[in-house]
Image (tube, rainbow, N blue to C red; front, side, top):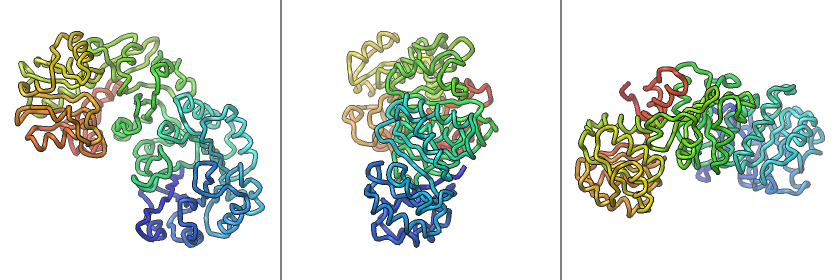
Amino acid sequence: MEIVATFVPSGRGDPAEELRRPPAGATMVELRADLIDAGADIGGLVGAAGLPTVVTLRSRAEGGEGPDDPAGRRRFFERAASSSAAFVDLEAARDRDLVDAVVPRDRVILSAHFGAGVPADLEERAAALLAAGTRFVKIVPAARSLTDVEAVLRLANAFDRGARAGRRAVLFASGELGRATRLLGPLLGAPLAYAAWAPERRAAPGQYLPEEIDALIGHLGGRPRRLFAVLGRPVAGSLSPRIHAAAYRALGLPNVFVPLDVAAAAELDGLLVPAGASWLDALGLAAGGFAVTMPWKEEAARRCTLLAPRAQRAGAANTVLPRAGKVLGDCTDMDGITRVLAEEGVSLAGAGALVLGAGGAARAATVALRLGGAEVAIAARDGELGAAAARRLGVTSAEVAASERVAVVVNATPAGADGEGSPWLEALRLPAGGVVVDLPYGPRPTFLEQLAERRGWRYVSGREVLLFQAVSQFAAMTGAAPPVRAMAAALGLGEAAP
């Protein structure tokens, strides 16, 4: 598998100099001429790249910024063909007559992008592209639902199982919903994996960085033995794939962990079913288990045939294991919360605690704290929902101001996750030295983290909770002893205690 980093210039310097420093893990470079200044010397840029190069002029009709007119495209590709580029990307709908006439077919990537979603005749279109005999074909429909992801993976699986004609087909779905196909495509035989040049310079939504692709699937040489996934919406920012992949690598397990964006509860029905019956299993991607995140923890619990008592009490499951004839469910979020509080030296017996929120994560936090012996209250922005959750769990409902009487606050809502101010969280009155556990996490400090620093509270991040719930989750999913230090390193937490 070649990892192709799509070059998008920063606009702050010489593009040729930037091309000389490709991202770590990239083995090829895609030069998107439609995203580069029109007067740029394409041949010179190809020469500046330190890796084999693909020259692409993505048309506006297929989601790029390049021309659609045949004459202008022909002039460009005549220049591109004379460069030292390893490959030239020609669009089947506009440039097919240039194959051999302008660019030798053994240097052509014949591509088709479908921005409106997966065409009903995707398989026939793919067969027509392959029949052209070019070195590679690239087929990229936009994913608008989990059904689109399934359709793309079905065709990728058919390519992998059938006569692949020298592994020429590159098939994945674009968009944030298509992330799983960008990881599974190469494992099903795609010879190229397209990646972003830099975090702030992604040519398309859903692109991974080269080092992310390596971290997530670099330990595999082909089809995985078991497939695991995180189910939620949105799920693109989940760190679960990275932490579990680090554990697989550390133990030499040939498994993969991917994100699946679930838009509606009904989509869970095709996944959370007894082993051998899901559409993933039908593709030969044996589903070993699922991590479930917001907003589907309650729906996941309803679909389990056997729930751990604590998950049943919370009415929420974040770990679902399809097994022979049954679906098991547990809520390892509780392990994450109790472990991080233990690490902070907090004794829950008789302590006052306030949980913010009324959803599945909040109920799991409440049960975990109750099992530890704490006196728990629930505060939610929707008072009626908070009161209903409190009644169900046998605790009291309260306002955020009640935090002045507790030792621990757990934020089980998305409030402040983006770092922006939250008047609701601003109303917290936890005494100095109290502990706040913030379940959300993101690329920058949350608002609650900033607030804790200003007010002298001890702060526990969602990443720390994620680590310890994932340790329990990994053990349940695989039956193997979790490599805690490797999992902590994947989250940038250094060496956590075993």
